[in-house]
Image (tube, rainbow, N blue to C red; front, side, top):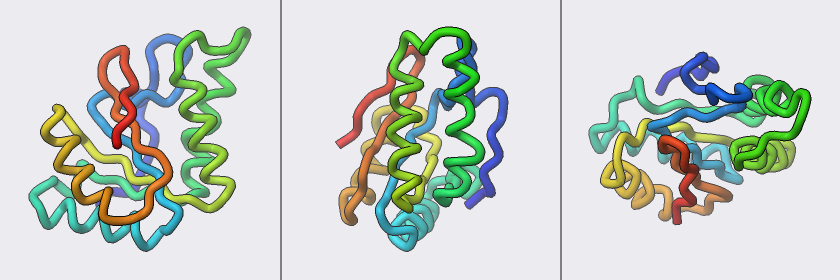
Length: 135
């Protein structure tokens, strides 16, 4: 798994909020479950360069500040800022994130097959102009 660093391509071109098109973000109550699912994805063939483990502190320091920028001077019109606020709430409760490259629906479903084996809080797939709830 890669160390997460927020890259410019992971932000919305309008407002700058966290919006990693082509990736899915899943939050887990348990850091151990997040780590285990990340490693299982790699074992199943997902490149380790396409899986990021995000401890709560990383979500709060790297992702959450993008909403403050996006909301200046007016709140974001899309759901990107609201989604980041949901991650912020969970991170403050100690949840850990897993960001995974999911280039298509099949990749997202492969990821979710593993995710569903443990408790998770939220799963979102970022597509062009759409944030999709994954279940």
